[in-house]
Length: 68
Length: 146
Image 1: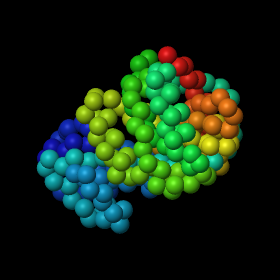
Image 2: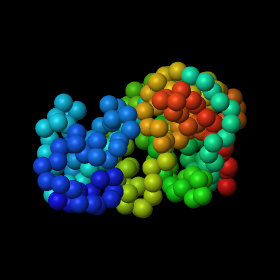
Image 3: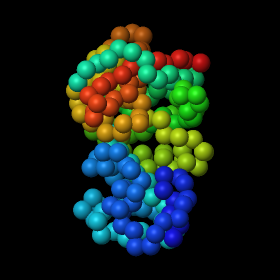
């Protein structure tokens, strides 16, 4: 199936979960990443079970914050 | 964490974009302001092509968190324009342009530039940092305003 991940479209195996994609894409510090699929944020508790579908658009977003 | 004062990366930003960051920061006083940096990387030099002024959902003079939906929309626009996300910026209304312990603790993206604008003095001071928590280092990035 084809997925667009961080703006790039590539072929991936079927029945891929969000968690497996995080590993496949070598996402650094994955515990601090939120994932959007087709503009909807996936709850981190659902990463292991959320199956990606052909044509999905995925973005990995790091929380961005701080304090002075 | 050690603050190593050496330049590991150069970053160029247009004067108009610098002015946009300053005006966004001043418009949000007394709170911290924040946003994203997008652009290109050429020969190891980060070139800022576009600034996204975003909402600090903390609405605080001492903290900031970028609005997640705005962050996502900005990232989508960055992809549409064929640019790369380069990092973020935020303001320190009354403290120097250096990453606080909280800034370092929350610096989760090891690829990002973390730009800080200080409004502590009459003349705004802009600095940029590369924070690698795994290595325990904070490196200063050399900024050139073009």
